[in-house]
Image (cartoon, rainbow, N blue to C red; front, side, top):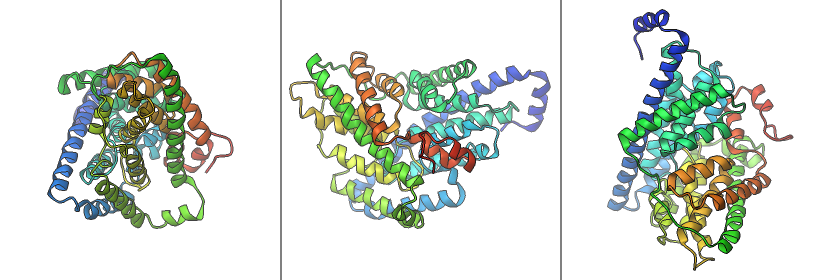
Length: 439
């Protein structure tokens, strides 16, 4: 934090517009460094867990459920704003950025808790991603810098921080802009667009300078024959939409359903978290570790055309669902990409003469779109992560079909529905996506 004496000295010397630009640039630098640190810590945590399993494959049956329960205890008692993905928190804060509720959602202690608890879950094999948490951490850093420099925190500031977090987490600048337009911003203005693009550009440059020019999943260059494309793309869209919509519907039900069973689960959050952790541990042990962690390495191999166990997709789906409904902090971006890749591998069995990696890519985007319901972001983020431009048209078709099918399975968009948990009650009810779906 800047010393108060320095803040007072800067305030009259530098105009409000200039301080706003300085705050945006400084925030972009800090959040990109935080995203890189998050990525490094996540990789180290997964490697440490792999060494633990190599030492004793039965240890996860003890440490995983206990850690899940402990993280949920700490989250509920001291940092309830840190639970879940992080993207719903940023969306809620963006609705009323000056409200006290938003200040809590974007508080630095909450961001630190989000960081540490996500790493803790990866350290015991939790099927979580760091990308959603990076969005909340990034928006929190951006808001903190604006507070330090006494610059008003607007919706644009929150959106820019979250969008730059997506860009830095995946090394996908265009996807950061698309995500801001499609998900974070309900009313996207030109001034917000400029702020978003500037912070994304700066965070991307910092990421390139520190981490190098890398492609998240490695360069993928496989094409499909037109006949296969016309069959595989709709099929991937339909299956991805059904499964992704079912996943989203389960998470929304855990947050808002009034059924007796869900109510009973909510009344015993620690026991529930322990049970979810046990499910993750058992699946991991039974599948030889396929379901643990982000699934990044397996997904990368599948996109390269390599063959892995056909159980990868199903066990990853269940493990990710168990982790997501446990109430612990952690994102679903990376695990959803992995589940989609597993779905694509299953679809590839129907097209033995076609490049397997291309079919995997269609399954990946179909399921990912089915979960997040953001087809533009999905296409851009997958294209940037694989450096593949030849598959743009089938990716677009798959994403649009998956979005439509998922909307039939789960009318509410996942992040919008979950964001209502972090809004004041009146605002939460008024922000319902679909008629008749108020909590």
